[in-house]
Image (cartoon, rainbow, N blue to C red; front, top):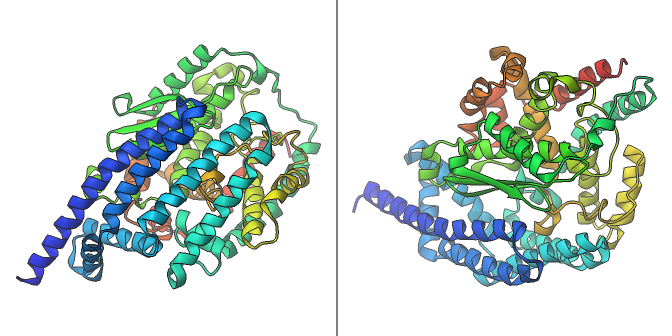
Length: 491
Protein backbone atom coordinates (compact mmCIF):
# COMPACT_ATOMS: atom_id res chain seq x y z
CA UNK A 1 0.00 0.00 0.00
CA UNK A 2 1.49 3.35 -1.00
CA UNK A 3 1.73 6.29 1.35
CA UNK A 4 -0.72 8.28 -0.81
CA UNK A 5 -3.25 5.45 -0.57
CA UNK A 6 -2.84 5.33 3.21
CA UNK A 7 -3.26 9.09 3.44
CA UNK A 8 -6.49 8.91 1.44
CA UNK A 9 -7.84 6.07 3.58
CA UNK A 10 -7.10 7.98 6.79
CA UNK A 11 -8.73 11.07 5.32
CA UNK A 12 -11.90 9.17 4.44
CA UNK A 13 -12.07 7.55 7.88
CA UNK A 14 -11.78 10.95 9.57
CA UNK A 15 -14.47 12.52 7.38
CA UNK A 16 -16.89 9.63 7.80
CA UNK A 17 -16.50 9.81 11.58
CA UNK A 18 -16.98 13.57 11.62
CA UNK A 19 -20.11 13.23 9.48
CA UNK A 20 -21.62 10.87 12.06
CA UNK A 21 -20.56 13.12 14.96
CA UNK A 22 -22.21 16.01 13.15
CA UNK A 23 -25.58 14.25 13.32
CA UNK A 24 -25.32 13.95 17.11
CA UNK A 25 -24.20 17.59 17.29
CA UNK A 26 -27.25 18.68 15.32
CA UNK A 27 -29.54 16.93 17.80
CA UNK A 28 -27.61 18.49 20.68
CA UNK A 29 -28.07 21.95 19.17
CA UNK A 30 -31.82 21.43 18.78
CA UNK A 31 -32.17 20.35 22.41
CA UNK A 32 -30.08 23.28 23.61
CA UNK A 33 -32.18 25.75 21.61
CA UNK A 34 -35.37 24.21 22.99
CA UNK A 35 -34.04 24.38 26.55
CA UNK A 36 -33.40 28.11 26.27
CA UNK A 37 -36.68 28.96 24.56
CA UNK A 38 -39.76 26.87 25.36
CA UNK A 39 -38.65 24.11 27.76
CA UNK A 40 -40.56 24.26 31.09
CA UNK A 41 -38.22 25.20 33.93
CA UNK A 42 -38.93 21.99 35.89
CA UNK A 43 -37.97 19.92 32.83
CA UNK A 44 -34.70 21.72 32.15
CA UNK A 45 -32.42 19.48 34.20
CA UNK A 46 -33.83 16.27 32.71
CA UNK A 47 -33.59 17.67 29.20
CA UNK A 48 -30.05 18.75 29.96
CA UNK A 49 -29.22 15.17 30.88
CA UNK A 50 -30.42 14.03 27.45
CA UNK A 51 -28.37 16.86 25.89
CA UNK A 52 -25.28 15.75 27.82
CA UNK A 53 -25.84 12.10 26.79
CA UNK A 54 -26.05 12.92 23.08
CA UNK A 55 -23.11 15.29 23.36
CA UNK A 56 -21.15 12.45 24.90
CA UNK A 57 -22.02 10.09 22.04
CA UNK A 58 -20.47 12.59 19.64
CA UNK A 59 -17.45 12.93 21.92
CA UNK A 60 -16.92 9.15 22.04
CA UNK A 61 -16.59 9.09 18.25
CA UNK A 62 -13.65 11.49 18.26
CA UNK A 63 -12.08 9.68 21.25
CA UNK A 64 -12.00 6.39 19.35
CA UNK A 65 -8.31 5.31 19.07
CA UNK A 66 -8.64 4.62 15.35
CA UNK A 67 -10.00 8.11 14.74
CA UNK A 68 -7.28 9.75 16.84
CA UNK A 69 -4.58 7.76 15.03
CA UNK A 70 -5.98 8.73 11.63
CA UNK A 71 -6.39 12.41 12.55
CA UNK A 72 -2.85 12.64 13.95
CA UNK A 73 -1.52 10.86 10.85
CA UNK A 74 -3.12 13.60 8.74
CA UNK A 75 -1.67 16.31 10.97
CA UNK A 76 1.84 14.90 10.71
CA UNK A 77 1.49 14.89 6.91
CA UNK A 78 -0.55 18.08 6.62
CA UNK A 79 1.87 19.55 4.07
CA UNK A 80 0.71 16.83 1.65
CA UNK A 81 -2.96 17.80 1.99
CA UNK A 82 -4.90 20.36 -0.02
CA UNK A 83 -5.72 23.57 1.86
CA UNK A 84 -9.11 22.76 3.37
CA UNK A 85 -8.05 19.27 4.49
CA UNK A 86 -4.90 20.77 5.99
CA UNK A 87 -7.00 23.28 7.95
CA UNK A 88 -9.23 20.43 9.13
CA UNK A 89 -6.20 18.43 10.30
CA UNK A 90 -4.86 21.43 12.20
CA UNK A 91 -8.20 22.06 13.89
CA UNK A 92 -8.49 18.42 14.90
CA UNK A 93 -4.99 18.50 16.34
CA UNK A 94 -5.81 21.57 18.45
CA UNK A 95 -8.94 19.83 19.70
CA UNK A 96 -6.95 16.69 20.46
CA UNK A 97 -4.45 18.60 22.60
CA UNK A 98 -7.31 20.19 24.53
CA UNK A 99 -9.09 16.92 25.27
CA UNK A 100 -6.60 14.05 25.00
CA UNK A 101 -6.70 13.39 28.75
CA UNK A 102 -10.46 13.90 29.10
CA UNK A 103 -12.21 10.53 29.00
CA UNK A 104 -15.80 10.25 27.77
CA UNK A 105 -16.84 9.67 31.39
CA UNK A 106 -15.16 12.89 32.50
CA UNK A 107 -16.55 14.82 29.56
CA UNK A 108 -20.06 13.68 30.47
CA UNK A 109 -19.49 14.82 34.05
CA UNK A 110 -18.35 18.24 32.82
CA UNK A 111 -21.39 18.65 30.56
CA UNK A 112 -23.74 17.81 33.44
CA UNK A 113 -21.98 20.47 35.54
CA UNK A 114 -22.56 23.13 32.89
CA UNK A 115 -26.19 22.07 32.50
CA UNK A 116 -26.83 22.28 36.26
CA UNK A 117 -25.26 25.72 36.22
CA UNK A 118 -27.62 26.89 33.48
CA UNK A 119 -30.67 25.53 35.31
CA UNK A 120 -29.61 27.10 38.61
CA UNK A 121 -28.78 30.41 36.91
CA UNK A 122 -32.28 30.44 35.41
CA UNK A 123 -33.84 29.87 38.83
CA UNK A 124 -31.54 32.38 40.57
CA UNK A 125 -32.20 35.03 37.94
CA UNK A 126 -35.94 34.57 38.26
CA UNK A 127 -35.64 34.93 42.04
CA UNK A 128 -33.03 37.70 41.84
CA UNK A 129 -30.88 35.75 44.33
CA UNK A 130 -27.19 35.21 43.52
CA UNK A 131 -26.78 32.73 46.40
CA UNK A 132 -28.87 30.20 44.47
CA UNK A 133 -26.31 30.29 41.64
CA UNK A 134 -23.03 30.71 43.55
CA UNK A 135 -22.43 26.98 44.27
CA UNK A 136 -22.90 26.14 40.58
CA UNK A 137 -20.63 28.98 39.50
CA UNK A 138 -17.92 27.63 41.80
CA UNK A 139 -18.42 24.21 40.19
CA UNK A 140 -17.98 25.76 36.74
CA UNK A 141 -14.77 27.55 37.78
CA UNK A 142 -13.41 24.37 39.38
CA UNK A 143 -14.30 22.40 36.25
CA UNK A 144 -12.47 24.91 34.05
CA UNK A 145 -9.40 24.59 36.27
CA UNK A 146 -9.59 20.81 36.19
CA UNK A 147 -9.89 20.75 32.40
CA UNK A 148 -6.81 22.94 32.09
CA UNK A 149 -4.82 20.83 34.57
CA UNK A 150 -5.59 17.76 32.46
CA UNK A 151 -3.89 19.38 29.47
CA UNK A 152 -0.60 19.61 31.34
CA UNK A 153 2.18 20.91 29.10
CA UNK A 154 -0.27 21.19 26.19
CA UNK A 155 -2.16 24.08 27.85
CA UNK A 156 -1.96 27.04 25.49
CA UNK A 157 -1.47 29.82 28.05
CA UNK A 158 1.14 30.52 30.69
CA UNK A 159 -1.67 30.87 33.24
CA UNK A 160 -5.01 29.08 33.59
CA UNK A 161 -6.88 32.20 32.58
CA UNK A 162 -4.68 32.73 29.52
CA UNK A 163 -5.55 29.20 28.43
CA UNK A 164 -9.26 30.02 28.73
CA UNK A 165 -8.75 33.19 26.68
CA UNK A 166 -6.93 31.18 24.01
CA UNK A 167 -9.82 28.70 23.83
CA UNK A 168 -12.13 31.51 22.71
CA UNK A 169 -9.63 33.70 20.85
CA UNK A 170 -6.51 31.88 19.68
CA UNK A 171 -3.34 33.74 20.52
CA UNK A 172 -4.96 36.22 22.90
CA UNK A 173 -3.34 36.71 26.31
CA UNK A 174 -4.11 38.70 29.44
CA UNK A 175 -0.94 40.75 28.81
CA UNK A 176 -2.39 41.94 25.49
CA UNK A 177 -5.80 42.60 27.06
CA UNK A 178 -4.30 44.45 30.02
CA UNK A 179 -2.52 46.78 27.60
CA UNK A 180 -5.56 47.09 25.31
CA UNK A 181 -8.10 47.71 28.06
CA UNK A 182 -5.62 50.07 29.75
CA UNK A 183 -5.63 52.16 26.57
CA UNK A 184 -9.43 52.10 26.59
CA UNK A 185 -9.64 53.34 30.16
CA UNK A 186 -6.99 55.99 29.55
CA UNK A 187 -8.94 57.51 26.65
CA UNK A 188 -12.57 56.73 27.48
CA UNK A 189 -12.81 57.58 31.18
CA UNK A 190 -11.84 61.26 30.67
CA UNK A 191 -14.14 61.47 27.64
CA UNK A 192 -17.05 59.98 29.61
CA UNK A 193 -16.54 62.65 32.25
CA UNK A 194 -16.64 65.38 29.58
CA UNK A 195 -19.85 63.92 28.19
CA UNK A 196 -21.42 63.91 31.63
CA UNK A 197 -20.58 67.59 32.06
CA UNK A 198 -21.68 68.61 28.57
CA UNK A 199 -24.60 71.06 28.59
CA UNK A 200 -25.95 69.33 25.47
CA UNK A 201 -28.46 66.68 26.41
CA UNK A 202 -30.02 64.14 24.06
CA UNK A 203 -33.71 63.39 24.47
CA UNK A 204 -34.47 59.85 25.54
CA UNK A 205 -38.06 60.14 26.78
CA UNK A 206 -39.32 58.61 23.51
CA UNK A 207 -37.36 55.45 24.21
CA UNK A 208 -39.61 54.39 27.09
CA UNK A 209 -42.82 54.57 25.05
CA UNK A 210 -44.85 51.36 25.46
CA UNK A 211 -44.69 49.04 22.45
CA UNK A 212 -46.52 45.71 22.55
CA UNK A 213 -44.75 42.43 21.82
CA UNK A 214 -46.66 41.93 18.57
CA UNK A 215 -45.52 45.30 17.24
CA UNK A 216 -41.92 44.62 18.24
CA UNK A 217 -42.07 41.23 16.54
CA UNK A 218 -43.17 42.84 13.28
CA UNK A 219 -40.37 45.37 13.54
CA UNK A 220 -37.59 42.87 14.19
CA UNK A 221 -38.76 40.56 11.42
CA UNK A 222 -38.69 43.52 9.04
CA UNK A 223 -35.18 44.40 10.22
CA UNK A 224 -33.94 40.86 9.65
CA UNK A 225 -35.44 40.88 6.16
CA UNK A 226 -33.70 44.17 5.34
CA UNK A 227 -30.38 42.80 6.60
CA UNK A 228 -30.58 39.81 4.28
CA UNK A 229 -31.39 37.10 6.82
CA UNK A 230 -32.61 34.01 4.94
CA UNK A 231 -35.84 32.81 6.58
CA UNK A 232 -35.73 29.63 4.49
CA UNK A 233 -32.57 28.74 6.41
CA UNK A 234 -33.34 30.38 9.73
CA UNK A 235 -35.95 31.32 12.31
CA UNK A 236 -36.36 33.58 15.32
CA UNK A 237 -38.22 33.45 18.62
CA UNK A 238 -37.78 34.75 22.18
CA UNK A 239 -35.62 33.73 25.14
CA UNK A 240 -34.53 35.19 28.46
CA UNK A 241 -31.10 36.04 27.02
CA UNK A 242 -30.85 36.67 23.23
CA UNK A 243 -28.55 34.29 21.34
CA UNK A 244 -27.79 32.73 17.96
CA UNK A 245 -27.71 28.96 17.42
CA UNK A 246 -26.23 27.26 14.40
CA UNK A 247 -28.24 24.04 14.31
CA UNK A 248 -26.75 22.74 11.06
CA UNK A 249 -25.55 23.96 7.71
CA UNK A 250 -29.06 24.99 6.58
CA UNK A 251 -30.52 26.08 9.93
CA UNK A 252 -29.43 29.14 11.88
CA UNK A 253 -31.80 30.42 14.56
CA UNK A 254 -31.79 33.59 16.63
CA UNK A 255 -33.74 34.85 19.62
CA UNK A 256 -34.61 38.21 21.14
CA UNK A 257 -36.44 39.43 24.24
CA UNK A 258 -39.31 41.92 24.32
CA UNK A 259 -39.60 44.58 27.03
CA UNK A 260 -42.83 46.66 26.78
CA UNK A 261 -41.15 49.97 27.64
CA UNK A 262 -37.71 49.27 26.10
CA UNK A 263 -38.45 48.51 22.46
CA UNK A 264 -34.91 49.38 21.37
CA UNK A 265 -33.67 46.37 23.32
CA UNK A 266 -35.33 43.91 20.95
CA UNK A 267 -34.36 45.95 17.90
CA UNK A 268 -30.66 46.04 18.68
CA UNK A 269 -30.40 42.54 20.09
CA UNK A 270 -32.02 41.34 16.85
CA UNK A 271 -29.59 43.30 14.70
CA UNK A 272 -26.72 41.91 16.80
CA UNK A 273 -27.89 38.31 16.58
CA UNK A 274 -28.78 38.86 12.93
CA UNK A 275 -25.13 39.71 12.31
CA UNK A 276 -24.08 36.38 13.83
CA UNK A 277 -26.65 34.65 11.66
CA UNK A 278 -25.45 36.32 8.45
CA UNK A 279 -21.94 35.11 9.25
CA UNK A 280 -23.24 31.54 9.62
CA UNK A 281 -25.62 31.60 6.66
CA UNK A 282 -22.99 32.92 4.27
CA UNK A 283 -20.23 30.39 4.92
CA UNK A 284 -18.78 28.67 1.85
CA UNK A 285 -20.31 25.24 1.29
CA UNK A 286 -16.83 23.76 0.99
CA UNK A 287 -16.11 24.76 4.60
CA UNK A 288 -19.03 22.58 5.69
CA UNK A 289 -17.92 19.76 3.41
CA UNK A 290 -14.46 19.76 5.03
CA UNK A 291 -15.78 20.09 8.62
CA UNK A 292 -13.89 23.31 9.34
CA UNK A 293 -16.93 25.45 10.15
CA UNK A 294 -15.84 25.63 13.79
CA UNK A 295 -12.61 27.43 12.99
CA UNK A 296 -13.96 30.93 13.60
CA UNK A 297 -13.12 32.45 16.96
CA UNK A 298 -15.67 34.28 19.07
CA UNK A 299 -13.79 37.54 18.56
CA UNK A 300 -14.33 37.14 14.83
CA UNK A 301 -18.01 36.36 15.36
CA UNK A 302 -18.56 39.24 17.77
CA UNK A 303 -16.85 41.62 15.37
CA UNK A 304 -19.51 40.84 12.78
CA UNK A 305 -22.50 40.99 15.13
CA UNK A 306 -21.36 44.28 16.61
CA UNK A 307 -20.51 45.63 13.16
CA UNK A 308 -24.17 45.30 12.18
CA UNK A 309 -25.47 46.39 15.58
CA UNK A 310 -23.26 49.45 16.06
CA UNK A 311 -21.42 50.57 12.95
CA UNK A 312 -24.55 50.17 10.84
CA UNK A 313 -27.43 50.13 13.34
CA UNK A 314 -26.30 53.11 15.42
CA UNK A 315 -25.23 55.25 12.49
CA UNK A 316 -27.04 58.44 11.49
CA UNK A 317 -27.70 56.91 8.08
CA UNK A 318 -29.53 54.00 9.71
CA UNK A 319 -31.67 56.41 11.73
CA UNK A 320 -32.72 58.10 8.50
CA UNK A 321 -33.46 54.74 6.93
CA UNK A 322 -35.48 53.30 9.82
CA UNK A 323 -37.25 56.33 11.20
CA UNK A 324 -36.26 59.71 9.81
CA UNK A 325 -38.03 61.73 12.47
CA UNK A 326 -36.14 60.38 15.48
CA UNK A 327 -32.53 61.45 14.81
CA UNK A 328 -32.28 63.19 18.16
CA UNK A 329 -33.89 60.48 20.21
CA UNK A 330 -32.32 57.37 18.72
CA UNK A 331 -29.68 55.54 20.78
CA UNK A 332 -26.66 57.78 20.29
CA UNK A 333 -27.14 59.05 23.81
CA UNK A 334 -24.38 58.16 26.26
CA UNK A 335 -25.88 57.18 29.57
CA UNK A 336 -24.12 54.74 31.92
CA UNK A 337 -26.41 51.80 32.60
CA UNK A 338 -26.48 48.50 34.45
CA UNK A 339 -27.37 46.03 31.67
CA UNK A 340 -24.62 45.08 29.23
CA UNK A 341 -26.87 44.03 26.36
CA UNK A 342 -28.68 47.39 26.47
CA UNK A 343 -25.63 49.60 26.91
CA UNK A 344 -24.82 52.35 24.41
CA UNK A 345 -21.77 51.64 22.28
CA UNK A 346 -19.62 54.13 24.20
CA UNK A 347 -20.06 52.69 27.70
CA UNK A 348 -20.34 49.07 26.52
CA UNK A 349 -16.57 48.55 26.71
CA UNK A 350 -16.63 49.20 30.45
CA UNK A 351 -19.11 46.34 30.91
CA UNK A 352 -16.57 44.00 29.29
CA UNK A 353 -13.61 45.40 31.23
CA UNK A 354 -15.49 44.81 34.49
CA UNK A 355 -16.21 41.17 33.65
CA UNK A 356 -12.64 40.62 32.45
CA UNK A 357 -11.17 42.05 35.65
CA UNK A 358 -13.49 39.87 37.77
CA UNK A 359 -12.67 36.70 35.79
CA UNK A 360 -8.95 37.37 35.95
CA UNK A 361 -9.07 37.99 39.71
CA UNK A 362 -11.08 34.80 40.24
CA UNK A 363 -8.58 32.63 38.37
CA UNK A 364 -5.65 34.31 40.13
CA UNK A 365 -7.34 33.26 43.42
CA UNK A 366 -7.55 36.91 44.45
CA UNK A 367 -11.30 36.61 45.04
CA UNK A 368 -13.84 33.85 45.67
CA UNK A 369 -17.11 33.25 43.84
CA UNK A 370 -18.97 34.61 46.87
CA UNK A 371 -17.14 37.94 46.47
CA UNK A 372 -18.35 38.57 42.91
CA UNK A 373 -21.60 40.54 43.59
CA UNK A 374 -19.92 43.05 45.90
CA UNK A 375 -16.93 43.47 43.57
CA UNK A 376 -19.29 43.78 40.61
CA UNK A 377 -21.19 46.60 42.32
CA UNK A 378 -17.99 48.46 43.30
CA UNK A 379 -16.64 48.34 39.77
CA UNK A 380 -19.91 49.56 38.25
CA UNK A 381 -19.87 52.47 40.68
CA UNK A 382 -16.20 53.20 39.95
CA UNK A 383 -16.30 53.01 36.16
CA UNK A 384 -19.87 53.99 35.30
CA UNK A 385 -21.23 55.74 38.36
CA UNK A 386 -24.18 53.36 38.69
CA UNK A 387 -24.84 50.52 41.12
CA UNK A 388 -27.16 47.50 40.76
CA UNK A 389 -30.06 47.38 43.18
CA UNK A 390 -30.36 43.59 42.84
CA UNK A 391 -28.40 40.52 41.73
CA UNK A 392 -30.73 40.22 38.73
CA UNK A 393 -29.44 43.46 37.20
CA UNK A 394 -25.97 42.76 38.57
CA UNK A 395 -23.96 39.54 38.64
CA UNK A 396 -26.86 37.38 37.41
CA UNK A 397 -27.62 39.32 34.22
CA UNK A 398 -25.46 37.23 31.85
CA UNK A 399 -25.81 33.54 31.06
CA UNK A 400 -22.27 33.00 29.74
CA UNK A 401 -20.59 32.01 32.99
CA UNK A 402 -22.79 28.92 33.18
CA UNK A 403 -20.63 27.35 30.46
CA UNK A 404 -17.24 28.62 31.59
CA UNK A 405 -14.96 31.63 31.70
CA UNK A 406 -12.91 33.58 29.15
CA UNK A 407 -15.74 34.49 26.76
CA UNK A 408 -16.51 38.09 27.64
CA UNK A 409 -13.34 39.77 26.29
CA UNK A 410 -14.30 38.62 22.80
CA UNK A 411 -17.12 41.19 22.72
CA UNK A 412 -14.62 44.04 23.06
CA UNK A 413 -12.10 42.32 20.78
CA UNK A 414 -14.87 42.12 18.20
CA UNK A 415 -15.39 45.89 18.42
CA UNK A 416 -11.69 46.46 17.84
CA UNK A 417 -11.67 44.13 14.83
CA UNK A 418 -14.71 45.66 13.13
CA UNK A 419 -13.45 49.20 13.63
CA UNK A 420 -10.34 48.16 11.72
CA UNK A 421 -12.16 46.57 8.80
CA UNK A 422 -14.86 49.26 8.71
CA UNK A 423 -12.09 51.72 7.79
CA UNK A 424 -11.16 49.43 4.90
CA UNK A 425 -14.80 48.93 3.89
CA UNK A 426 -15.58 52.65 3.63
CA UNK A 427 -12.71 53.07 1.15
CA UNK A 428 -14.44 50.68 -1.24
CA UNK A 429 -18.17 51.08 -0.53
CA UNK A 430 -20.31 54.18 0.02
CA UNK A 431 -21.51 52.87 3.35
CA UNK A 432 -23.81 55.72 4.33
CA UNK A 433 -25.52 55.79 0.94
CA UNK A 434 -26.18 52.05 1.09
CA UNK A 435 -27.61 52.27 4.62
CA UNK A 436 -29.81 55.29 3.87
CA UNK A 437 -31.31 53.40 0.94
CA UNK A 438 -31.76 50.22 2.98
CA UNK A 439 -29.53 48.47 0.44
CA UNK A 440 -27.54 45.93 2.45
CA UNK A 441 -26.35 44.01 -0.63
CA UNK A 442 -23.08 45.91 -1.20
CA UNK A 443 -22.28 45.77 2.52
CA UNK A 444 -23.05 42.05 2.80
CA UNK A 445 -21.15 41.25 -0.39
CA UNK A 446 -18.08 43.06 0.90
CA UNK A 447 -18.35 41.28 4.24
CA UNK A 448 -18.70 37.88 2.54
CA UNK A 449 -15.68 38.46 0.31
CA UNK A 450 -13.37 40.02 2.90
CA UNK A 451 -14.54 39.00 6.38
CA UNK A 452 -16.59 35.78 6.15
CA UNK A 453 -14.98 33.55 3.54
CA UNK A 454 -11.60 32.83 5.16
CA UNK A 455 -12.53 33.15 8.83
CA UNK A 456 -12.54 29.38 9.36
CA UNK A 457 -9.15 28.98 7.71
CA UNK A 458 -7.01 31.61 9.43
CA UNK A 459 -5.94 32.42 12.97
CA UNK A 460 -7.31 35.72 14.32
CA UNK A 461 -3.98 37.48 13.77
CA UNK A 462 -3.75 36.20 10.19
CA UNK A 463 -7.42 36.99 9.55
CA UNK A 464 -7.36 40.64 10.60
CA UNK A 465 -4.06 41.16 8.76
CA UNK A 466 -5.57 39.51 5.66
CA UNK A 467 -8.55 41.92 5.76
CA UNK A 468 -6.83 45.16 6.69
CA UNK A 469 -3.12 44.71 6.02
CA UNK A 470 -2.46 45.75 9.65
CA UNK A 471 -1.86 44.20 13.04
CA UNK A 472 -4.55 44.12 15.75
CA UNK A 473 -5.05 47.45 17.51
CA UNK A 474 -7.81 49.18 19.52
CA UNK A 475 -6.86 52.60 18.10
CA UNK A 476 -9.40 52.61 15.24
CA UNK A 477 -12.24 51.91 17.67
CA UNK A 478 -11.13 54.55 20.18
CA UNK A 479 -10.67 57.14 17.41
CA UNK A 480 -14.18 56.36 16.17
CA UNK A 481 -15.77 56.80 19.61
CA UNK A 482 -13.91 60.03 20.29
CA UNK A 483 -14.84 61.56 16.94
CA UNK A 484 -18.49 60.49 17.03
CA UNK A 485 -19.32 61.43 20.60
CA UNK A 486 -17.28 64.62 20.66
CA UNK A 487 -19.39 65.83 17.76
CA UNK A 488 -22.66 64.63 19.28
CA UNK A 489 -22.01 66.34 22.60
CA UNK A 490 -20.30 69.45 21.20
CA UNK A 491 -17.01 68.73 22.96
